[in-house]
Length: 73
Image (cartoon, rainbow, N blue to C red; front, side):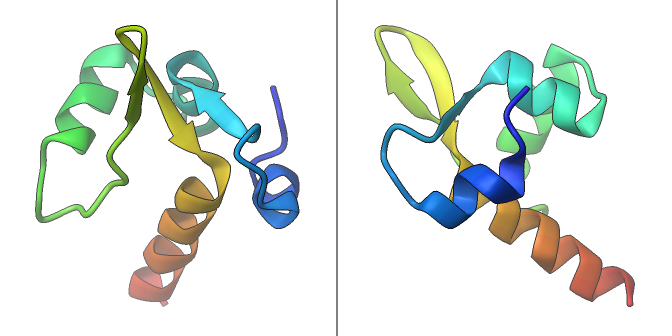
């Protein structure tokens, strides 16, 4: 798995995370990822759809992580 923060720091379009990488990062199921993506209150980043597959920008995931840490503090 790519390190999310390292990929976010490079800020390239090639730094896309697959749904499997995002699920592994959070240790969640595909159904949980679907629910998070469709819950407006959570403000989870929306995926990019490329050839019917879902990808997330590493920078968006890192920003979401930072927001969640701020809310928890």
